Amino acid sequence: MTNNSELLKNLYNAFNPFQPLPAGDPNYVDCQAVRGDADILEELGNRIQLASQNTCQLYSGHRGAGKSTELLRLKEYLEARQCYVVYFAADEEDIDSEDAQYTDILLACTRRLLQELRTMGNPKPVLNWLKDRWQDLKDLALTEIQIEDMNVELQICQFAKLTANLRAVPELRQEIRERVNPHTVTLIKVLNEFLTDVKKRLPANCNQLAVIVDNLDRMVLVKDGERTNYEEVFLDRCEQLKSLDCHLIYTVPIAMVYSTRATDLRDIYGDPQILPMVMVRTPKGEIYQPGINKVKEVISRRIKQFSPNKPIETAIFDSLETLERLCLMSGGHVRNLLLLTQDAIGRTQNLPISERAVRRAITQARDTYRRAVENHQWSLLAEVSRSKRIINDDQYRSLMFNRCLLEYRYLDEEGEMQRWYDIHPLIQGIQEFKEAIEKLP
Amino acid sequence: MMKNYSHLDEDLLPDEKEEYQDLISHLTRNRKFGLYFVQSTPLDDEKIITKIIYDLPNKKVGVLRLIEPIDTLYERVLELYNNQQFDVLLITGLEHSLYQYEQENFGQITEDKFSNLTKVPHILNHLNQKRELFRDNIPISFVFLARPFLISYFIYRAPDFWDWRSALLEIGSINKFISMRKNVFSSDCQS
Image (tube, rainbow over all chains, first blue to last red; front, side):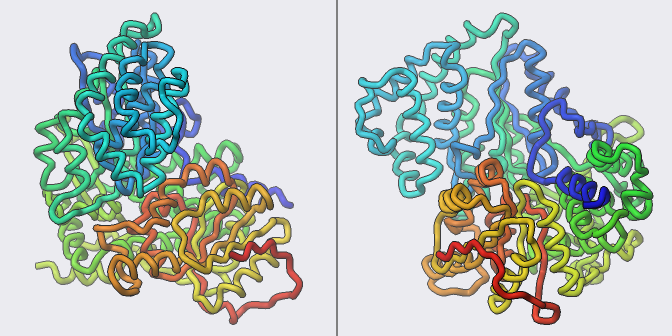
């Protein structure tokens, strides 16, 4: 095997699109300045630090934009500031993101908090709640064992079984919800008793408790008539969602933030914090070099770990132009950037990566957008590409969800934050879009 | 309006041979978990499978041919992987699950209900949910050979699973360039 092919292998594997970076990872690039100064540490973290009472905040952004990476940074930041943080990805073990309701989230929080904090506080109130419900629930946890016969660890495990079945066994899901639903208020009450006890026994260097529930934004939109599952969770059950006795951060689907219910959401939780794209063009369509440079840095950090000496713009890519075109076509979206780069490397037999390989990766990535847009949506995209604005309207919802529309931010000359929107740059070359542009008045 | 329009906005369509060679490069280079989608025709699936096995002599390639609808896949693949330790798993026949979904929920098979928001096919829900487990416990290249409508189903109804892909490759008529030897290794897991 030549060095060239070994290097290509290393580079290929450095651009996997499915792993959020842990806090402190050397590949992390701070893009705050080109995301309109969006800083999760300042916006979410400081609010928790300064608050005299519990906060409940929403965090949102496009799928794959780097939310989990940012939330893991926030966790580390808070931990360094006397805050004990429980972070969990809701859909990894507890929640079915295709069919999630409020009860599922409450049970997931209960299980995670019990699991992580059981040695710190007395879990008895919660376990007593479970005992009281046990006759009703034991068949749903698929066990015949009497809860009185279990030790505390095993009792806590029963919550895990319930949430595991909630997630994995659709036939049981509705039944579990129906049996737990009438008792959610009492469950919150006992969970808060547990949290109160935990807060008294936090490690000596901690004086606050925060829970970060990640990946709730992955909930797939399901409509039942005019109602959506997003509204059920974030609006109808907001009082309960907010009522845990600690600081709370929930991720929320970006499509909800831009729905007709956006105002309700803001009234309840305050302004959701949104992680925008890295701005690679200005609203006028000019190349924004600081943004391009940041995106290039995302690529070069990953390359330099395997090829510290080769010039990226001539030895890894065949030209600066090829590299910059790739960056532009990502729209400043990190996972798109990783996908395009990895696919271009996959289409390269020998370094440098050619313009042709990049173009073919772009062509293939464009196809996803072509398929994701329904016929009636091309005209909406054409309008946004001209106006750079959207209104909170449900017709934009799925276009935000599938990243056909992207959000950008910048600070204007007066230091005011300006928010604007654009189509994903891959859409620009699609025939249906070009036709919609021609039809604009 | 289109002042930023460039030649990169024009599709560069590859020939089948180039696209196939790119698939082999992807699979050769991937060391751990990876998701690949190959858009092909049912007539070409077997030829593509045979050729991939032949062209990846240093990888152990498994084949999972699904011949009936399924609701889950993870446990089955985990067992196969634990027994056979392959590097690449080629999967065909997922469309049967979508046909059943359409038949049961919409009364007929149309191959076009992917944008319907009222339902989610069980198998796509399962894949979307279990993606971390696939990634963490079965660190191989998964190659789904699929029809165009199935790709659309992934895009609409399993968007997080789809978002983890490393590549989609469109291989049309493979007959144009195929040259195969017989007696190639196959760890078939005929279902």
